[in-house]
Image (cartoon, rainbow, N blue to C red; front, side):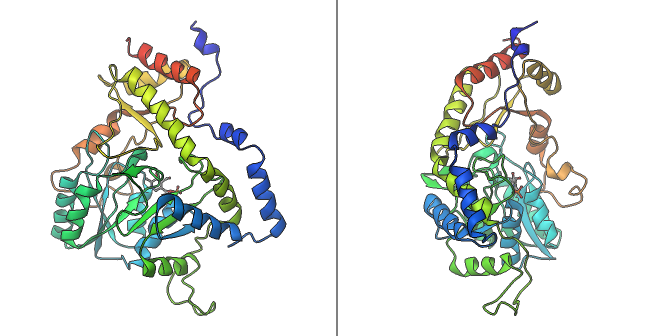
Length: 382
Ligand SMILES: Cc1ncc(COP(=O)(O)O)c(C=O)c1O
């Protein structure tokens, strides 16, 4: 028996290690909220919004209850609804398309680029054509910064502009990454992010935020966040949601944001090590020119298929893996009747059939990295 089987399994994501690093900072922050008792809209929410705005270089941040709400609120604010089409990549987490359908509009799915996993601008154009053919009015595009890498905004923005679409960036996985030197948060009309615990910047529950430079949009988002309230609290001026972040999560995020930059650097060291040690046996992820990644996932592709056996072999060495996403959205039951770009989505289907993600977090020490590398190489007979 291999000696690795006697070692503890490596955590896929290690929230506990981060908790240890932060020591009593989180407990103290939560304690302060418990003492002042402003559990909703406490001072920490305002501080978090200011801290996030400074971090990302955005004019406004509207913190909210989840990444899904962040996306939905922007679509609601822009009056997206029946008869409208919103173009999304198919190879993404379901929330990207779900929010579109929740407004009564139609998600139109487009393909991604094989090397970066992000939206293919040529497919975006075909998706807009498919939307028009279906009698829909294309109104918006939601590029996703999948696995932590920014989408190709320079290719997407001119198409969106020419077609009159606004851009809502889904940075749920990419918040903290840079595109051509600038942090995500200022590309397009608005950026939505998630603070789900497994995200690169996660809280200890659900949370999210919208970043925008648009004053009017920010004001409407703040209203939608609280049932569409107007300046008179009892005169609700539009339909809204209960989509506030709670003060406790804001207090936790303020502490975590202080170490986020350092954690991003640590994630990049892990990614570099993986790339150096594995590029000759598997297809390692590629960063497009001008992009940095926060490595929400480290996703590889195998040379000859056999994903299930590969996952089993790694598991037997205490190395967990995960598959994001085994089915693209247009292949899932709830989404299969929505339109797709003309010519279909072959790359999304290919990736769903063969991608697999390795353990990735800021606290993956060198010995654990070595175990992952050895397990991958031995599973492939390298
Ligand atoms: C790409 C993407 N969009 C949206 C979301 C939704 O975020 P949340 O789970 O906070 O609602 C997630 C994460 O779960 C995601 O990965």
